[in-house]
Amino acid sequence: MMLSMSNERLSFFVVAVQAVRDGWRLEGEPGYDSRHWARPGDVFDHVLREDGSDELEVNLVVVEPSSLHAVVAGVGGNQLKSGDLLSGER
Image (cartoon, rainbow, N blue to C red; front, side, top):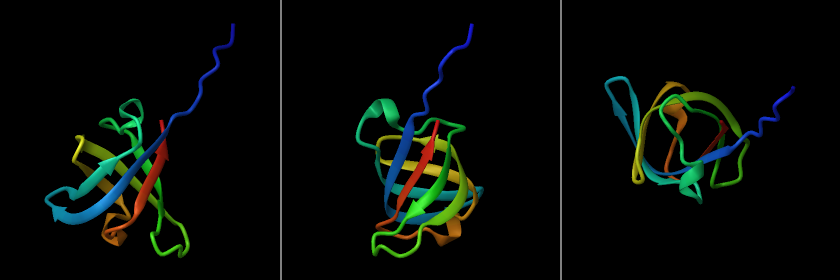
């Protein structure tokens, strides 16, 4: 018997970025529906720029999520800025 797994899209709209001890604290808003909010261990892998410039690839693991912020660690956090939209899949 084969089980069908569907991927859930994750997103986080970045309002502000602050470097913290083990990564970056992102102030902002998680995706449109709380069922699709990032959980600890989820990974954001793309950044869409507000200005429409090229999409960036990142590898940011969610360490601490909430409805108002997320702390992430990994590669690419130093490139984030206000207005960016992080996306990933679970």
